Image 1 (tube, rainbow, N blue to C red):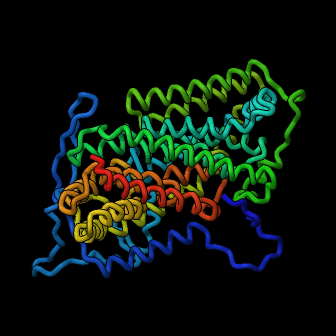
Image 2: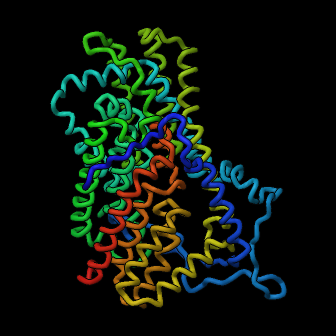
Length: 510
């Protein structure tokens, strides 16, 4: 890879054109989505229950019946267009209220309201932890004990987070780690983008190339009639390969930033962390209170991972554990007078930490509103999104097998903008893609591979991914700045994935 010589930070007084804010871009996409409702009729599918076996247990999933698609019609038999207006009352969705409807949509178990509350709780809890100063002092000790070996942080952390994504679908959990790791990366001479790469992006690399992810590949195989967790040999090799590629790309970028910090795409947003007082190790505080705070954080992380793996904890349970961590940390900080904290200081820290999450939280809600403009993701409800899904399937069904395999990857990559949930996308698309694969001569295993690569890798790019926006939020990185950085990595992943899918079909991967 060639080194970059461009400076990511505009000079003061520069009159050059600037990219619109992410919120503006999402609104413009909302305008396009609203226009699409006047051009594309609404359609729906019937649903059915798919049964499959995983780890010796029978599981079920509600999926679409691909042969049941029909456009909605009125009493006269005319095709219906669910055209949206500027504003819809009574809980409806219009162009000027899609942001509000997106913000309050869903439940505590998912997007948008559940994810938004999760982000605020996580931000507030770690706001208390950061106010104690324990993390800063701990970072100084880590740096002091690893002098000369700092370069190992990136490959080790990337590999561990990638493994978490592959084994148990780690994603939202990366947000909490990013809060802790971001100051460390700055102190090591790197930046916030490097933090996102070794945490959230690493989890999605593992998620995409997983051989056993229960929320992605297992469900996709189950609803496609493919033996669950079959084909693991190739997927394990892909996980190793893609993880090494991710590590190499991150090291290349981090090396350039360390040599010249102004090459960083998050140079401006990292400034508060760089400007923060950086005492010497000999001047830093470390007492029993600091040790107890650090033990609380580590114990909470381990407890959450255990709960996710063993008890399938999700947003409400995870958020509650981190809130508890914040409360315990506040008690310890007050008892040991860490940074002279009082209970009022802890409350202020919680509010400041939650406040940092408000911008990305707004983006999460606005992005969900786009899906609502298109009619939502319920296959049984007539929507523009269902019509797009059906049309894409018909188009792929008329192509030669190699081209069909590749277009399955393209389709899954694009469709992930609208449905970022791996299990949700599998339930919506694989019942359609699996029989199409039979028709055009593509193996169902390849269809599943195209799904998981397309779904997983685009999670590092699309602003509709709540976990991505939350991680960028805690690292204070605007999505536009992230896009200016990540497009190279995304293009490389897509090119390699294209070769993998076509080669898998050519080799008869089943």
